Image 1 (cartoon, rainbow, N blue to C red):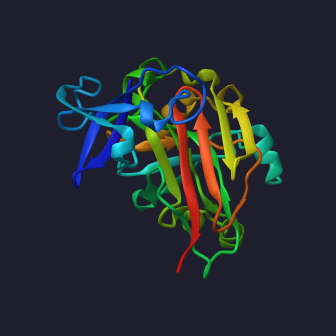
Image 2: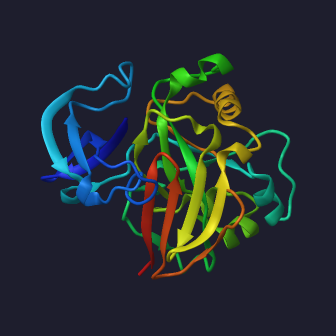
Length: 274
């Protein structure tokens, strides 16, 4: 099931996205926006009854609504250097344990929203395509066998990074935390095996990253166990699982997309701050 958050008639609503197609690229699994529809659900899908959605009967074409970030998390927990080749392209070896950092909720944007380069402060802003985990319930110290119970679903993410500030600051809060530096979307896929999904990032239609989640150094079960041993995760919180090799800079006028097999494609234009 694909859960979207969208705006229509100046109201924010949640819905279930469906379509007649079953391809392998494009809006979701090959379908253009014209072929997709979204059935509204009552309330929001997170909390104790996560996954138990009730349809209102209202339905819209996806082309007629504005897709928003599928969730507004209280926090985004991200993992650094979780693909071997990415760690090596940054000049280091992967850490023995997952490397945790945080992105603020104010960095989150949705499909089609512009990534804004803070050009007065940074001259090197990079893309980092990732698979994101969305939590469906409050949890802490989750054992391995219960990890599936706390995951609501998965979405695409772009861990946008001011690379020059990451290197100069000695810590990552500023480099990772600018407004617009965490695109999420286009929706949450709740029925997905994340073990071996293809992840592809393109810039202006050119493939820059292409890898598989089977190459994660620390898999999703390990990451959820590790992160929840440190902090409580709330319904709607997001975990970014790491980016593969191929990171690179963005400039104004670029269009960057992140596609994860079985989920769909997240696309964002790039602009400079005025």
